[in-house]
Amino acid sequence: MITIHAYVTKSDSDFVRVKILDAKTKEKLIDIGFTNDIDLNEYKINTPTDEKKSDVFNKLRELDFYFSDGREWCPAEVFEYLRDKGLLKGTFKMISWTSPDKYIITVDK
View 1 (tube, one colour):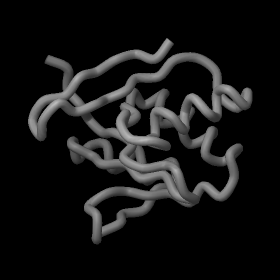
View 2 (view 1 turned 90 degrees about the vertical axis):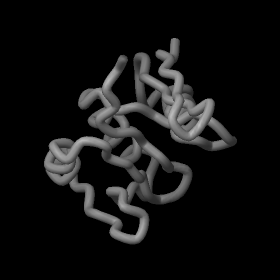
View 3 (view 1 turned 60 degrees about the vertical axis):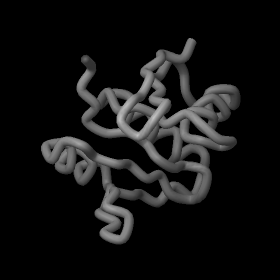
């Protein structure tokens, strides 16, 4: 079974939000510039431009974080969009849920 440390929950606005499942991950996010959003129990960072968002996505991918797949403009689709624009290269890992406790991990091509 794969251990999920964190995943990107939202990225279609001027913020990227990450849900952590492992407390050790918190420090890595803070080092990148994330702050805690107590209301959602997530961490967020301001990404006002596609360039800033792609920089953050690249750092999250290097940390082996997952990008949520699902409805339109989910983090996985935003990653693909930024890659299509030439701001990102390579693959990333997606997470999608089949039920509240079950998920599927795939690697984008």
